Amino acid sequence: MNESASTAGPRRNRSADPFWTIANGLSLLRAALTGPVLWMIWMGPAYKWYLFSIVMAMIITDILDGYLARRWGAVTRWGKILDPIADKVAIDAIAIVLAIVKGLPLWVVAVVVGRDVAIVVAGVFLLKRDRIVHVSNVWGKLTSCAMSVLLIAYAMDAQPLKVPFLYLSALLLLVSSLSYARRLPVQRR
Image 1 (cartoon, rainbow, N blue to C red):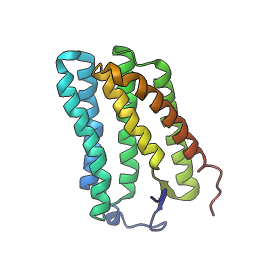
Image 2: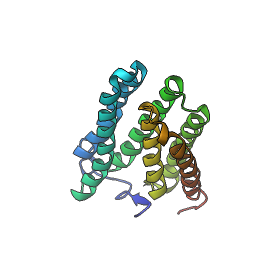
Image 3: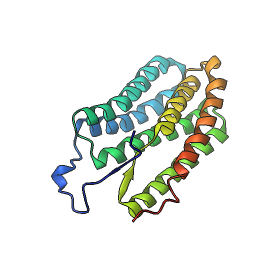
Image 4: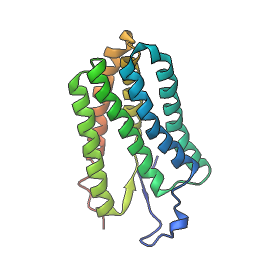
């Protein structure tokens, strides 16, 4: 998979990079579903299966948005930004509420939110420096997947999954952070 995708040049036609596409709509839907998920976590076990259903829908939109964009030739610069931002908003907000309500360790929240802030700051830096929107790599995608399972385990009180996915998520957070950090020193002209 290509780790970065360049834009078509400094003067792109606005209509050539539309905001409103099905893939971008799925990313926006995923971000919007974060609010109801947070409310259901806060309200407790009575909403557990609704919560599970909505989180699964969010995961499906995460898989579908990129697939559909590539399949239909509708990959946009907006989509390369919206998709990871939707993921970060959802994962970070859910992690914070799970720490308050369900005992997700605070160090996990600090590492996840800190890493995501660093990725966004680095992404803005790389966009300004390279004029390229860097997309997530396989390590970032695996980290998001493991984090999703960890957060579902905490939300659903699935004890057998908590510890293994806590360690797997921590390991993948480290590996993906290092893989993203490798992008920074390369100076492009």
